[in-house]
Length: 170
Image (cartoon, rainbow, N blue to C red; front, top):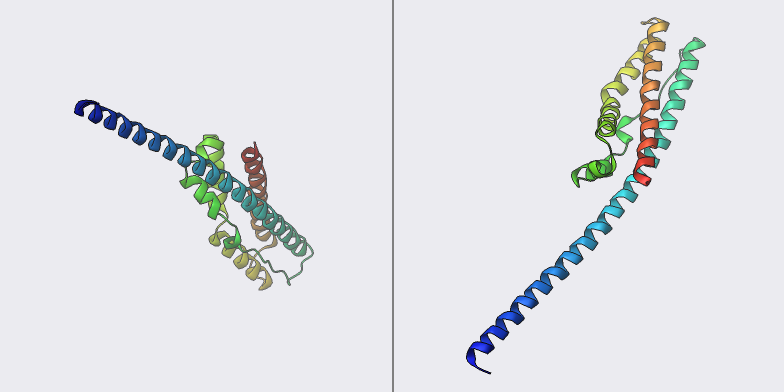
């Protein structure tokens, strides 16, 4: 074997080895990405289940408040804490670019709407309304309106979470 043939053989072997390494690297990365994506979707489903249970509790709590106000009870309180609504995996789902894979743009808008509607500000507003009711500084109809509106927001958030879970399960 001549010197030129040895160089060509070495070059071909090196290129083949490099190409093989790239193929193995891409296969490994594809496998890891698929595994990470499946794990993220699984965790998001769990997060949505958690949120649905929490939102059911809040909806029940608001219904009890409405009933108490209806009965003219001044000992009405709520335990709503919107900061307990989980959204860690939802944010990660968005950052990984999976949101466009699973959701239609209209669904994405609706998801953002319900996540932003349940905030500490609305929680504080309901607590303030109930305090005014206990102190007899507000009309019954205004309390009803605020509580019913908040319950509708919570119900929408719960229904949207259930819908999103169904879409992601497909």
